[in-house]
Image (cartoon, rainbow, N blue to C red):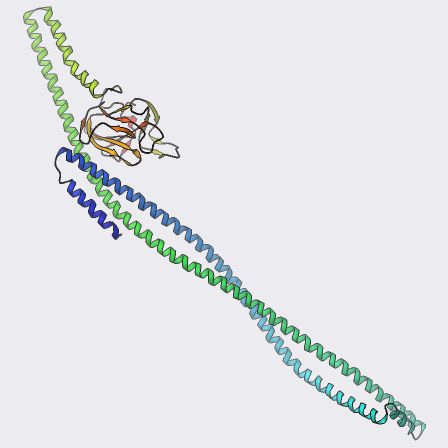
Length: 462
């Protein structure tokens, strides 16, 4: 915002200097300076507005990126929470498995004790058999019977012992197998749970990494967004200041054009007064001649009067021919500014390369075709005018109203600022300067000063 202050000061100084001049030529130069300054302001406004639009577009793009990233972050939040729940569940399962292992340890300990006791018993049996020679011990037991009944009892006892030994061995094998199986099951289960937990923690770590990366991108975008918004605010503030200067210049231009219009009005009144004075003098001369003719009573005098009357009208015809060699001048306040084909009307038009809001009419013809002032007035501007190329503006005062006509895309300018011009007077040549598709005259008519265009066909015979 502050960087535009020197520009405003320079413009104010230029306006103060230009308004200190007082001559007619200086007035035209003053208006031209003001219009040039306004052009610069408008160009600056366009550049600032383009910058503002670019910043707004970038802000919108950043906002869309942020929305997408935030949506991804939201999705990641959901996935992270899911993984966290799964980890909590597997941790609960691990705790339950550990509790299950603790519970099994007691039964395993009892089982291990039973196995140890059986091992001791079996070792005692083995040692006894080694001492007695194995199965011989059982025979001695049988042969030591005191009676048949005692023999039967001893046979039964031996069988019972042998069956007990076989059962102890079978139970020992089964208990050892059960012990190994239980140990393996709980160890496998715990290992699987630990592996599952590890995978879940790795998946959660990856999701956390992705979220951290997205959080970083969002932070960068937020910083970029803040920077763009600040730059946009600065451009808008500068645009507002330039706009204020442009408005001041517009008011000065309008005031200067109104002043020139007043000059044109007075010039028109003076022209009409002189015409009336000439007509009065001509009428008085004609009346005096008629009196003289009547006094002499000769027909030759009447012939001279007729000749004198013809000479009176010739200067006007001569002036018309000198003022407007082409095109032919119409009656009334206005005349056609150039000969040629009306190639584009006032108002909306569907063209990709030109403004759709056409503020004037186009008359097409070859380069160098004469362009004349559409009415009596004062030239208020000559020179370059943006995409219009070479331009002439003429301020008119007619029937108590002020008008401004504009002639654009000229190949040459044949008048100067501050010059009084008559209707039909040559002021320039048709061309194709500025943004143009070919040689033509772009003609505008404004009510009051420049900036209020109307359809020229409503006033000018086209």
